[in-house]
Amino acid sequence: MASHALKSPSDVIDLLTDQHEQIKSLFTETLVLTGDERARSFRDLRRLLAVHETAEEEIVHPRAKQKLPGGEKVVDARLEEEHEAKKLLAELESLDVDSKEFTTKLTKLRDAVIAHAEHEEAEEFAKLGTELSQTELQRMGEIAKLAEAVAPTRPHPGVESPVANLIVGPFAAMLDRVRDVISSAR
Image 1 (spheres, rainbow, N blue to C red):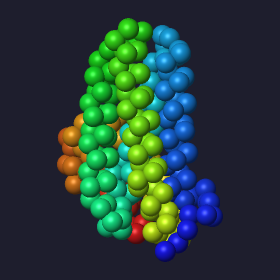
Image 2: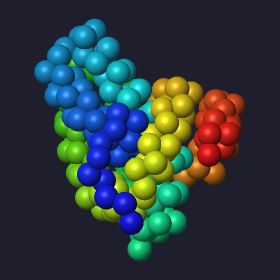
Image 3: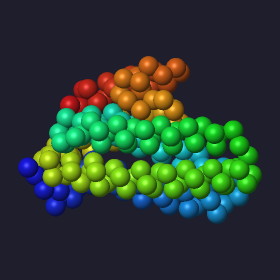
Image 4: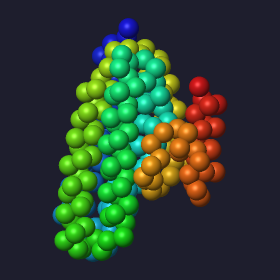
């Protein structure tokens, strides 16, 4: 068993934890802005959430299922949270960014995403940090960066698994590239 004492910029845990902080900041920014600035900030948030979740779903969750005691149960709970967040995001897409309903739903989404991130960090990332070698964590980080480069720019509710990610409508070709990148990098 390895310890996650040494940090590396390419370590998958550090990469995804840093993204959690970026996501929290984008929620704060989006909630205080209005008009075009709020719309731009929301687009940035939506894209980061999409690429972040794709990396987790394609790289971290499968490894957690394999390596962690009770990993299947842990991952299933995270996938359900991700599905609910994607549904909220889809609802936000159709709303005026300056409407009260948008602000209410965005606040609800923020709270759900923060709780989800805390669960991941405690129940998945920390445990993977002790179960996997630093070399493997770095390799997974490199694969995550490659996968994020071709990940979808919008989250898709109901697409919380590697298999489902690869059969979704117009994004299938892009997601096939993610799979190819992940497969060739392993």
